[in-house]
Length: 356
Image (cartoon, rainbow, N blue to C red):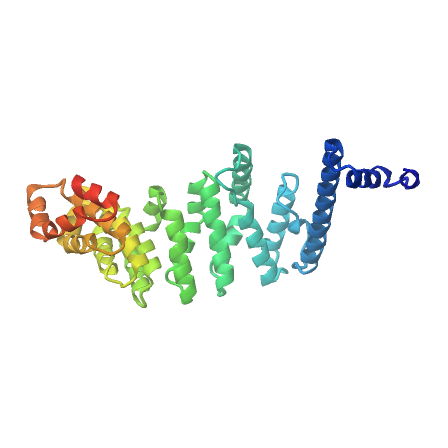
């Protein structure tokens, strides 16, 4: 006790540890010692993070420190001002503009679990960007010759379209037209990037598809994904086309051709998309006329249970059509596979076969 009392600074902690070593059954001492150990661990972790942050700041771009600050509410307007200065300045180099674009894109990153206040704040920032000279500067960077700059600028536009309701203003300034021009770029990577970005911004947005899509663009996108064949990009283009009835006649045959690719992952995506299309009467008729019925019958006996299930679901949707279509399903040879499907080891396949 006398030794402990002589340690004025760490008196209580030192004394508690030694008392606990003598009397471990004392619950009060146990809680105090455990709390002290946790507190020390937190301090060590904080010191490690501070050291790591110091190292990260030392290797960051030599830009205005305010640009490297976190996206706090207090610094949001300051960061926007700094980004505006960098993007509009003729003295800024490519690295600085690229860093500014990436910073701007990260500002609009918000998860589905974020509170409404955060979404409202991001919407106000997006409106400010749209109404300021920042957006025209970003659109101008879509014409650059470096894929890093093009993709960063395109991502900023895509994030703005998601964060703001002022879509008409973005279209008016030529942002969507600028991303459409990426499809006709001399840079191969810019074409594929353009398809990915258009897929993001056009999905479930009919008002944007009205401004962006036309027959020439769809034909060009299909040409890009065919030579060489990019399965994922092709699926993106097909999904864009399948959302507009005037492009069904082009998109659905491409979807059926893509299903012949010997890749279970691609086949699964194709059959999932086809099961959705079969619910639409117009799409269902085009699928039957282009040989989709025989494809679905073959897929119903696929080794992959998920692919087989979606194929049976698609056939079930097709069977709700006219008598001629039902007769065509009977003649396709599906009845030969029904006994096998009814004896399948997966219950959901047996159940869906009965429902069909």
